[in-house]
Image (cartoon, rainbow, N blue to C red; front, side):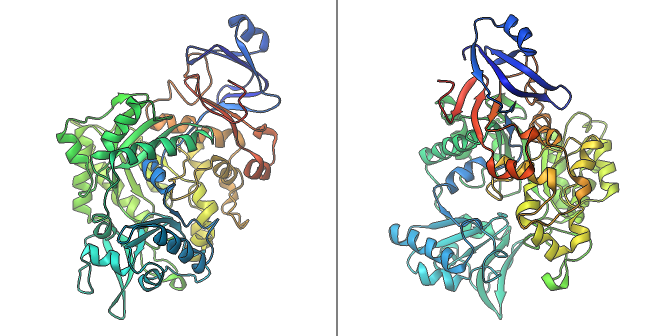
Length: 540
């Protein structure tokens, strides 16, 4: 944590502070920022980092992702659409993994998008059986809300043609036969019989994912559903990763709060709201209200287009059950981080939150969050603002899934999704994030989407909601810190703030959107003045 001066390129202090010519850091914090003369006077003996025209910004904050599952997925079968566009390629990757695995070992894959595959549908159990007859297979769609199991996996889970759909879940059948597709809470039937990773694998996943994010300019991240892969062992893994120096990022973690989650176990074990420090803090509990708009399981008032399959989606719980969960966790003192994408699910959540707001347990200052919050109406925005309920959106969904939204919902409904400019101008503090591994964690794709509102195919969705580059960076830095009660320490580069800094490969503030998307990366990432990524060895 040597003294350093950054100069030679634009230094983005934050949306309120604008730009500076130079910045000095000392003891892990920003010491001075301003003109070069002012900064040199404050730190005359500091070593220099020459930006050479590149921009320095507050390090990115990944406000909604699944860090540990992402670390595990990096070691699994990658089925993401940017690499896998055909059923044959998906099956080849699964088959290769099955051949390399011991007989009977599980083969797990993540990231396929049935809408992007050449077949335009989900793979089937029979197709997975053909390439992995002796190994159970479970592959999860990119949204994380549905997946396909082969026959061996369904046999291990005890699922047969007469197995009833669980509450808030669907086991797909066609002509009375199982297809292998499990949606929403039905996925637990399969996941519960997959052997959990051991302790070292969990810590290694945290380290692997953290290092990967640091290479993109992140110094802070979240794990939004701790406990859904390995139960309480995940809590222990995060503590072990921090204790042994294997957690590169500051973590704000969220406990899985559905009945199958670990929130109650964690409470009984003594875990309490806001417990921890800036390297690992336990801040919130998550509950699912619905699914995904791309997978036709987000809950809407108006139905999906008939051409897409119709229906109004899936509520994870009936009103009384989810409202009881929200009340319980609110009164325990947790921040509520509630998954709701469709307007009907958002309404269900808002009504539950409003009912939980009481004189004995007021909402004031709690900063409860609605995660994703993709398709909402003006009345819902007004009610969120009145109680300080924050939206935590993923603009990258528009880039990766926007054309699918149009196919499922039509253009008028889709172009009003994720209204970033409206949220920002009305003071909602939208924390732009990725939901990785649902979408890519690459922050430059998120920035591109916020400033253009373009999908990956070039479709413009709601141009009036586009942001400036400065506003987009603000949403992916300061707004994330705000949702985590850390805006007094992170999210800007002002004197006294933690020296969480990303040096980018170019000046994004004078670049075209396409240059930001295709030609920008992080060259240097610091967390509290400590270098956690250095592409060129310039801080060595």
